[in-house]
Image (cartoon, rainbow, N blue to C red):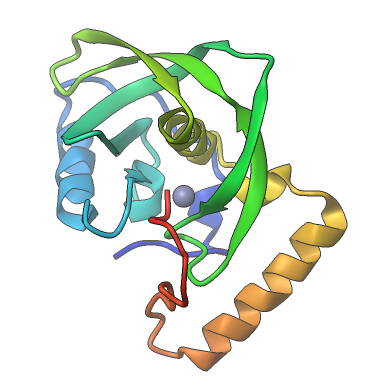
Length: 176
Ligand SMILES: [Zn+2]
């Protein structure tokens, strides 16, 4: 089950993942079970109840598990694009993010990986790393806009009591 705002687990910074540890393996299993690449681009372990620095992402045709991802370089140049999140179903907002990033992480086995990403893929990794730091994309919005978005979110939730996502009301992109 995917945790949704305001679940407090989403606000706690996740701890370092030890590759191969039982807890990390369990978190990876939970990520793989919960992740549907048809409807989302990424998921962080705290979104599925594990406060561990692990995430699953779809980059091109590849699905990758990343442990301890961190941004080592980011472009000065920003790009504004719409962003949604599985933990805030039914809403999205325009968020400025660095256009290019270099991310260092480990794969499932603990082998170091380095990713140079641009555009939506850079945004995806920044979004997932934010999750692992206890942040959400709404934190990047001006206060008034954030308040408005959260109000809309509460309304959307009330109107879909089963908690299902009300995505797809035209033009919505896969949430991150
Ligand atoms: Zn998210």
